[in-house]
Length: 291
Image (tube, rainbow, N blue to C red; front, side):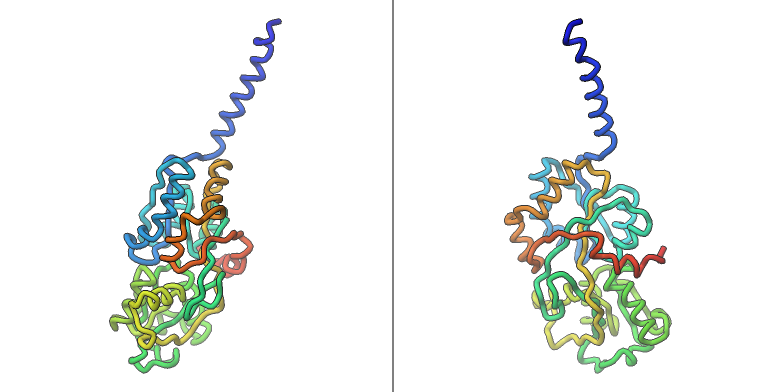
């Protein structure tokens, strides 16, 4: 028998196996990237531009940044498989995992310590007020107005609800006269500064950022309460991404990050570090019963 004919079945089997492998994983073009809204969308996109450019270079494809007006938008996009790569909040990650999202966390930021952020790996939820309001304890906030950031924000809504309930024995909405959602930590800080609300729950990293940029003065704001340390935002991947593509993405975050130094300076971060689901176990357990 001709040897070329003898090897044909093996070649056919190899080609079929390649097709099966290709069908069992995703190799999206463009790659869909999402960020939880922390500040103005345009400003946030500009801050992350070096990362987007580096991903496009390393992956040889366009990166489509998915508009995400809320934390919930990112969660739903991950659940629907419409987002391939995302930075999410710890509670958003817990909620998504609890609802069955097929995602894997692999990296997070290493933080630079600031006035209110005292750890490289964790931040805090802060309850802030204008200092000239004369508010010095939580009991004085009963019947006042409050700004939260987003319903799925760890430091800007979920932990505050638990804290107010534990400290006052009253549900947050009942304790305050009016509760509004600012949409981002920056807007919540701005609402307190302008006197639009009496108090707000915000991330320590965002308050440190506002101080660093001179948007508020150190003597303008008082902190009435701070949470225990919260592990910083996980970076997650859709589990259906082809292994070779997932590996190349991880290398951008955890390999040579010298092209991202300008981004790290802009965000006042040290860089990226490896992360795993275990780091968020307590957060996941905390919100395991939430829908």
